[in-house]
Image 1: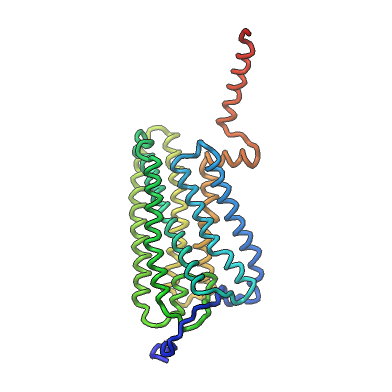
Image 2: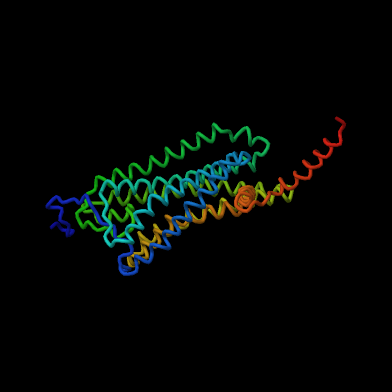
Length: 339
């Protein structure tokens, strides 16, 4: 053994692990299968419903709704990267996973998380153009620009997630083969690694801080300007609509960033917090956005809500209800016209 109590002298590095989430709830973990399965089904169904609504309704083929649909598609991918293995771990105490599988799961977790951040930036830019430059919005926010923003979001997410995974893959895991977590998170893997991990810790923290601070500065600047311009709109209805739309986006931003930041702070600062509490916080920041985002956009976005009500309840939107008398009147006029 070396000075740190590691078995690195034998050059051991585990390539197969056991995920043990919520380790102190051994007897109660099977009872978690039902509520978390319900949560997973809810995340998939509610996000898919809004995505289907945006795709199916031609009047929703606008940048804002397309970006909302992309964000909700990322929610589905993020939940799918975590939930199946998590549910499997509730059924059996030690949930086996290979190093390759662990790194793959870690990549998808952080890739989707970063993609969330980047799509929120794109949505802020869209609202900035729509409210600050309404007369030029259709000329500025083109499908070409939307494609460029999507490529930038993918590239930037890959540029952060890939180095993090590659750096983790080069570490040696010799402390134990048991990961006391329901998923392969970066910090959970570093806890079972041995050797000098100073660079890994600093790089992970630096990437998180730079990404979050950069995004928050841009988001804060954009929405400050947006709200300032919105408050100066003379039409009360237009002003209320602009602020309402921005309120939905800000709720989503708070949900994603606050849950992620609180978890990072607890993991790195509060050493006395139990493993079960840390697991719970991870579940919150990984799954809460996917559960709340479709509710926020589905309930607060009038156009999406009206189409969902029509699809599920057969309820007509106010526009369609107003157009029906006009169509009936036109039909009567046509009937009264001579042959």
